[in-house]
Length: 378
Image 1: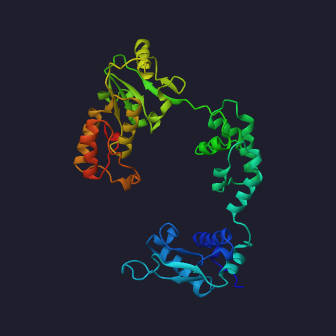
Image 2: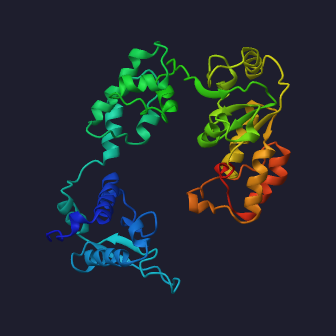
Image 3: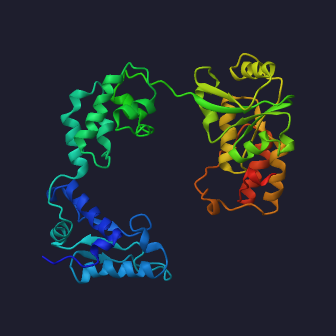
């Protein structure tokens, strides 16, 4: 058995690569494998290889040494290929004969069940503790630093003590999952499968509102800096508008127009008559006599917020006094490309239901292929 190279434990990506092979080998016994375990080198599997520079070339030299000096991998290059691409682009690594034993020795990983198989075995043994189904719980290995599988299953099982306590998801999470109130944030569907009768109380949506002395309309503002400048009177075009801080997509929540689903917080002392009129409109008791508008970033996400708000506030439309100066910057190519602000994953909403947005703003974004943030308007 070869001794591990002296650099092995200092090379995170190669350690990860070697563990990947052992994980795949553990998932299936040799008798169930129809072809050798292998991996294709690309930006997702070995990111460090695809960052141009000496570090990538050095990493490739180390991988080749596992073939040539240690007989761990076979390397099959992907020919024909782009003549300007590195030789390792989409190359295929498979284990040589005896490579598995070498990796297990280096990594000190004995043959046995994979971590996912051990998790599924633990879930199956504890299935009687849950009144519902456990299929979703078995799908992925849920790991918490410093906790064994049994500890995590115990945490899920402890939810049974709170089935009728009338708590929200954050409260349930903090009580059952080691004080972590956010652990269940993306696991509500899983919890409802485990506990079909569990009562989960929705958390009220927090909404900040500023009411001026006289009102000419209601304006939802996307970003905090623009909202705080507006309530301070530094954006004169916002004067005489009821200002609502609409961060992110919280305005799309179905419960936002229900008294028990929203908590309205007013900045400073408000005119009680106007406040009552606003709340009567908010809770759909009467139609608004004021125009209702939204102003946010001139990007796909901002247009998506407008679309989401229109699902809850039918008469909302894009606020032209805010968007028109932003549109000029966009048309003058003074915006930013999506990748510059890590916005390349934003999705075009298609249509919003607002004529100004659908016929002017969105076509301009598509044509210029740039975005403009609302903070540019002072």
